[in-house]
Image (tube, rainbow, N blue to C red):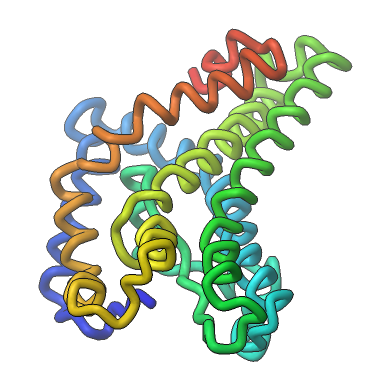
Length: 254
């Protein structure tokens, strides 16, 4: 679990200031007050997508762990879709400012699993699988609305609804890809640790103890964006253009 209390407030404040530079400060310097207003509006429309994606992602981890025989997530109140149980404040800030972030990791006890290694891997992959299904589902909702009312997303309230819906697709794919990075406490590192049985090794302990610093360095160096921007666009475009034949989906963001 990522425990922010293990780190001094200094590095966190520095990173938050850096994240601010990616968002409102950059908007202010580029377009002045109008840029700030536009950024605030875009952020408000983005929040529903973030809450849905994070809540379902962490719920999936908790539910699969519960079904696999571990009562820990249920005892900690994590088998719920209530966003308040799953939001990690720092991960939420990162998602808002740089569009890459995470939820509060679900605590599990693998000793309770019916089949420890198999169930650990299933729990690790359940979150990203849920995000993929959500992206496909909300892409389908866009298709249904557009088929019934072709001009609904063109302006006004319809435009805001369309913006939120396409952001739900994008944010779910974003969280899917980001969590597959082999960085603790993200799912990718956990799945690799389970596959190669790294738990209990010095490598696992050292990397996990420095998880926050590794995440900070990755975000500061803009590594997620450099690694994931191309696959992010490819997956979203596949869902919208190839599955649902909406080739102009990107115009819903303009």
